[in-house]
Length: 559
Image 1 (cartoon, rainbow, N blue to C red):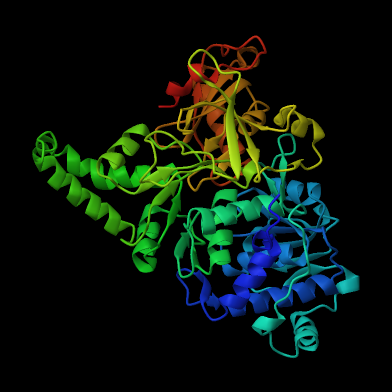
Image 2 (image 1 turned 180 degrees about the horizontal axis):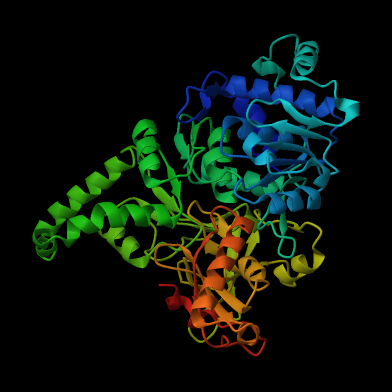
């Protein structure tokens, strides 16, 4: 447990607001809206009044669902500094999944973007007392006993409490120990697969400590482009929490992070650190670099010593300028970087490294700066914060990666069985990933025992959830969801031929039925999970003795 007062989660922000009062804190990129630390602290103080007037108690849950913006940031910080527990929900979850999480988490208040609220029926979330807009803070819905709590009423109460104006010396949050719960992050939405990760303040504080003091990735005046969803642990920890703890400036991207939009944002902001998922770098590599190095003159030069360095240096300069030109390094997380891409970037000495983390560790487990990083690894376990080991290694040293340390979750909310299965008897967390650790402590992931896929912006995609829905559709015996080389989802379906034959379906009609299934399935999925094609597989899938499909046999069938 981090007991040093400097790393108490609530006091970190109390101190940051006071020390950075006039500095810019957050900007909604693409708009003229920027909040200084003082203005952000003032919004948080208003939200605390709103919480009090609505009867929110310490450790009550506040659900938060919307795109990256300053209102989202303010709500998250207001919740943890108040002593309540925040429940971030990915904005791309469909309405049914969002409703399930809101109810399962026992949320009392809900802050939500107006467009998302349109798909939710108030009667389906009976425990929520108040729903507040993340667009402009207006109460969307309230129980009768708090119907008088308007924004005007809150402003009057704020004036009474703070004398009309918040000043740095008035920013003082109640004591909150680091062993208290800060958030519950759901790794999925669907009822049968939901796991709410119970994250203590200590885990968030540990990630912040590493970003500020151990690695100096964030510092006063640093600039971040926050395009990963803040409801996802990776972006939340470093583009938001660590950045604002250090006195940095976070530029929030609320749109879909297409490469064109991101490159414009990088040019505008000139970020000092870039957090990304592999897909972004891989797309830029394919569009900007491959066309250059594939041309005959360049491809010949790259084979000639000394001359190749000149060409590679120009490519490196072009790539660095494309990302704004002022960043220390790019950190890749969420999934392994394509080996070909990584090898080329290392060849041109491009400042990139790959880290390793998971929601259950809020998220960081390992990372090493690019100048010391070993190619194809995911860095070393964070010194003084995290440890890693290989459980039951085989003859090649490959086994399940287990971790321990300051960043560990407490378990899964209302799911004792899943919690029990996730921890080893001595308290180490089983990651579900297979790998090795070399003599220098570098972790190399060899494969994932988990089947999670990565969405376009780093969202977790669990194919079993999609398969469970598809398997219930007409003429489907069993299915397998795969990801093709373009990171699109393909469903491989073994059809129910008995049902098809009973209804006299021809081969063409069976394919039409599968296309109809696809159109019926996609509205049930998050926006980053659409199935672009269903392929018919004529045989039952090969299975393990436990009757699990041997997925590795079919991975190449997505293309």
